[in-house]
Amino acid sequence: KGAKDYCKNNGFSNFAECLLVSEQLSNTVEEAKEEITKKGKPDLTKTAPEITYVASEEIPGATVPYSDYVLWAYGDSVVFNAENGTYNLVGNVKENQSLSSAMQGKWTCGTDGHASFTACGTVYHITSMEGNTIKTASSRTYQIANTIGSEVGLYKTTDNDGETYYYRGDVYNNNVKFAGFYWKIIRINGDGSIRLIYNGTKSNATGYETSINNKGEAYTKINYDPTYVGYMYGDSFSKEPTKSGEVSFTDVISEAKYYFGTGYTPDASTKTFKLTGADYQGTFTEWNNAKKLNEGYKYTCLSNTSNGNCYFLIEIIKLNTSTSIQAYYYAYSSTSYLETLKDVSSSNAKTVIENWYSTKFTTATEAGQTADKYINIGGTFCNDRSFSSGDGYSLSLTTYYGAYDRILNKSAGASLICPNTADLFSAKGSAGKGNKKLENPIGLLTIDEGAFAGGLFKKNERYYLYTGQYFWTMSPGRYDSQNASADLCAISSDGGLVCISAANWNIPYMRPVINLKSDVLLAGGNGTMDDPYTVKLAN
Image 1 (cartoon, one colour):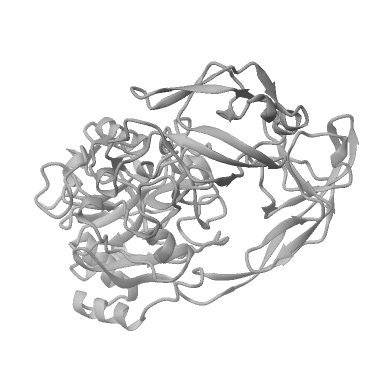
Image 2 (image 1 turned 45 degrees about the horizontal axis):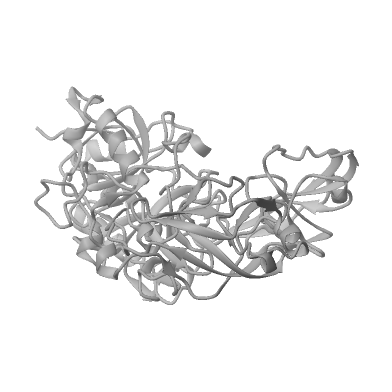
């Protein structure tokens, strides 16, 4: 019967209060909070649930996923990692390769979209080729040996508004149907509102069906500057191009035929560069063998067109390997950290999410009211741009942002307190905390919330945020000066927490987050996938 009947029979009509007392069928809200508090702090250095893995035997007759446009990585053999259930390619590993007869007898992760992907949950042994086509292959995958620990349900921590109660682990009863969509409850916020994350248009949705913007653009169009880790950002850039320090640039595809030029023309109005004298095209190995650097061909946009504009320009010093060069790069860069925090321009993510809200929530109805009437306009979303190293704005330094330090470096624990007011996004017209920069009261998950939910920087397919698909959070990870890459954090396709390039990875997937008002009432359901909660407005 669950919460629906327990709350109804015991007089708990408020939705947030019902969630609390239903956790352990408490007699009062105060008793429920005490019982949750007694559970203590979970171990955020482990996934929830904690999982161990074993390798499978090699199974013949495998079909290797294939796509014409994806380059491959392969190795002579594989090593299994029992901690995260993945195989690593080892022995003469080659990356960024076209499918060819050279792969016969080799191991590969297949073609899941990452040209340099060298570890995966399922690995393929290519046993024979027919021309450039795989004829036969076998596979090995992982199996879950054991699920350890009992960290599941509600736990307590603190956010910017007070005590917050969040769901963790393999939760089955945090499902809500609202505004014609399905959602997962993340937590009861410190102000009593209920935080939900979008989970699709059907109760059992998985993969890309749990997100919006599935065929749209990446989080941000460009990412060569630290500015672009912002959900919004200041657009005050230098009037002249900035030259970076010497770096080992590793974003080179060995088989790609790039254009090289003898000069360049900057354009301050568009903050871009155009190659001049770009009459040589070839791979970096071909360019090096032809001694084109001696002829002055030292500039490239890493593009296969000669007349396009690029946001950052590379000046080559030397070739290190077929996929790495020693170089400088030029870009129109931020002038100060404070300028990056001036929220003037919106990221692609913010535009997509807010347009979706405008389209859906002012037309969808719930119990006779438009869905926006249920939303807490004072709800906040954290785009934490505090940093632990670097300076947050220059090209010459790698900046590590707060979330990266808390979650991936593990020097501090996850936190639901947003440290900077400028980074605490709230809607225009709201009376509460936040910067009031949002057009609509909607945002994205933070990577800290992913950690509290049970995620870590390794596989976890058993907690409620796992979908089998990458999706973005709004937490900055780092600015990598070695590759001119602004990295945002995401939940990966295996449920792990990662920080990756916000523009270079072809990941458009976003799961909107909303906050229901603190006084909404339970209308029905018990929170399971088959019988999700429904809500109604207070009279």
